[in-house]
Amino acid sequence: MIGSLAGKIRVHGDEGRRAFRFFVALVLLLARLVTAQGTVEYERRELKIPMRDGVMLFAVALIPKGATSPLPILLIRTPFNAARELQGSTLPESLRELGEDGYIFVVEDVRGRFGSQGTFVSLRPQRDPRDPRGVDESTDAWDTVNWLVRELQPGDRQGRAGCAGVRPEGADRGRLGGVGRGLRAGRGAVDSGTAGGATPAPMLAGLLAGSR
Image (cartoon, rainbow, N blue to C red; front, side, top):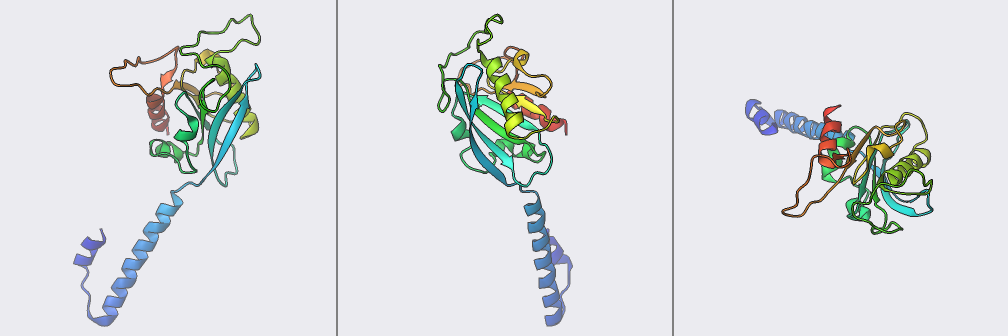
């Protein structure tokens, strides 16, 4: 852009060259200011979230700095190491478009994986509803969402999304805006469109981005 402008502007003498250099410096300064305004800084927190049976699940949160109003929470539940997914205070490239909408991002290790306590069960069956202390992926999601709303961002206008094996019947419908699941499938693996009614994480991210 600057090169095309330079080709159209005729510079006469030292005064003209100085004016042109000032113009180029001003354009570069404005470009940097626009880029800086679009950059969100995050605070990284490591969390221990209690479940109804006393097990503590590990999660990492990235919270936009300087927020003055309630923010929606995007929850990702994974068996693939939450600390690795959010290693620092910089948002991963795959989430940056959603970051423009001002989400709090939380990645949680599912029960029994990496930083989370308990026993990992692949394709854990649904709990017996007659057992008040019974647990499954949906109750873990419910307990996590309730804790996040209460501890991270008090208020009653939170948008929520969960993934990695979360079932919608386990969501607190007053606080959970959407439920999805995350899956890193190996070569040759077959990934169905939904699991227990939960939307795959890439599809959920596309839906959230398209709703802006």
